[in-house]
Length: 290
Image 1 (cartoon, one colour):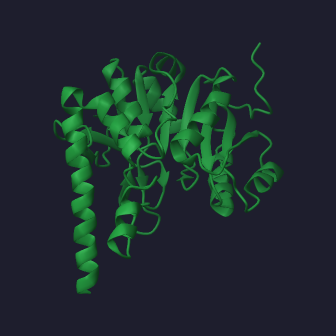
Image 2 (cartoon, one colour; image 1 turned 135 degrees about the horizontal axis):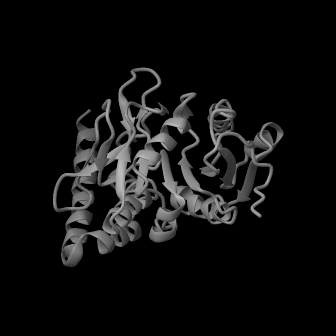
Image 3 (cartoon, helix red, strand yellow; image 1 turned 90 degrees about the vertical axis):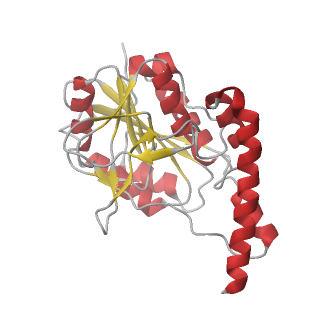
């Protein structure tokens, strides 16, 4: 008999294991979990598994004092998003959940978010369900599902918010509901990516196996865009930043193209690295002209 640790029981859909990874955003993390907690009584039973990736701001303690159904795994401080999510997902899978819910800790869920995600999953039982996000100030869409717009697997565009279910090719990983049978077939998130790209990779892996990607009507919560401003400094500093974990690191770039670009991946990799070099030169020149 399945006995999830301190699960909150409600609803009729079975267990949702919420997977998160966090680093030194205590108040943001607590606010996200509160938005999840506010839905208890209207959602299935939940179990949160959270990777604390070397937090030094007391995140784990603050969470443990408020939410008894959160199970924490300790990271090294250098896992970043993909590896941190993979660590949490590995533990979450041991609870034999009916769904996995990927959730970023800077998301504030609407009160009916999970109910709407599960309802969409009922409409599309062989799909991964994606919840679009809006900016908390402007209300403009920030994250959601993606359509592939060219032969290059990194050429994608955001699926705009609509009043109907929309099909896509892949997704941002901010709020994503994955049914158990889909996760069983597709496998775990690829924690070998250094930070980003593991979500886009997962969407492509799923669609390749015949599963759909569906974006829920409207938005299901707020999340400000984490788009980074151009780095500043001399050429070496800028070039290093563009190739860092939160830029486009070589190892992840190569891994992604090998998996999704077909036989032309070596050429696309070379062209991509040259584009980063050109971008660094352009930013450096623009900085000097200011």
